Length: 127
Length: 310
Image (cartoon, rainbow over all chains, first blue to last red; front, side, top):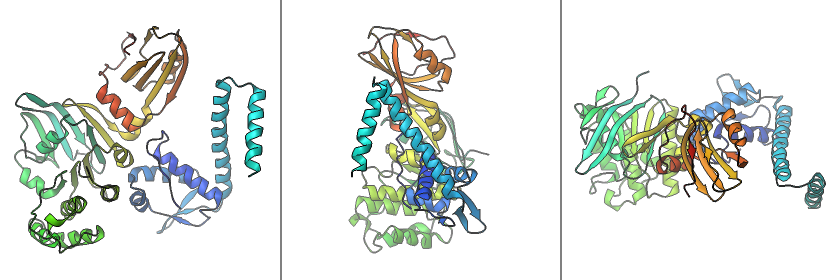
């Protein structure tokens, strides 16, 4: 898979990696049993500090997305898909919440907000 | 763990200019350590002292436990160094300079060098003087790392080079860190430093303004934008270490380290504050704040009022 890392957007790099792996699993870009590059390989590929990669991998392991395959490296777990779909949902909910908060803050009433939401949703669905 | 590079109380002055005014720096082993600072902050002077080309007026500098002033030849055999204008014998071919340099190092140097040159796709039979700037830099890098040094010292090695060459340098740095070796990098390419550095030190006016792990720096620093009811309102500085603050009309922007939730709440509740927005600053924003701002002393002291400084 291809990663898209922005070191200066405020989200720590390791967090960006974790999210992108989860999204990739949820999208089927990474499948169960698939191997992911080693820390050293990925660090070279992305020109990113290997400690940052290691930190992301540790977190993905703790969150039961990947697991070590003895002697080979890290692989995507069988049950990762459901977990990552849920995780993606949570992340999307947080994004949505951020937008909603911004709308409310800028003075939109609930009615205006709902109307805006429906308009945009309809527009997207028609495409 | 002993530091790979240890600088203690180093002072260095030139005629009419104090370049280094008491530098204390410890570079741990196995990390990518980035040295940032404006032109003239003292980075190159410090590196020249480390490589033994300059002698400090006071204080001590050691690399791998060896004294930079008295044992600089031994040091230079054990480290790799790439400057921003590598001095190479222009008349030699790329191949010949590898052969020549291999005499100074244990066996295996030339094979490593040739492998690197092959990876970097630099033509071996071409003379150094005929190489492009980027190719020269790659030759310098290959010469510096072919003997697998414990420490790689880079002084703005990619200034003026195209993004592809810069990327190749980064990959090399990252690979050395992955194998447990140390890289000390002085650079202006802040976006690159943001990708590869474990530690960051910011030099300002010959002193160390800040030195800490990059992750911790970014985690603990916030950019706070306050909207006030009136531009003449005076508000106390937030708790924590304020790196920089500016005013524009009714807004104040503050870059602050280690401001906790209480400090943020206190700001929100201050009279005259209508709106508080916080965001994580980029390393570039932190760097500019550090080098531009008046250094405000760390506040465990009483909050001080500050008035508009438009």
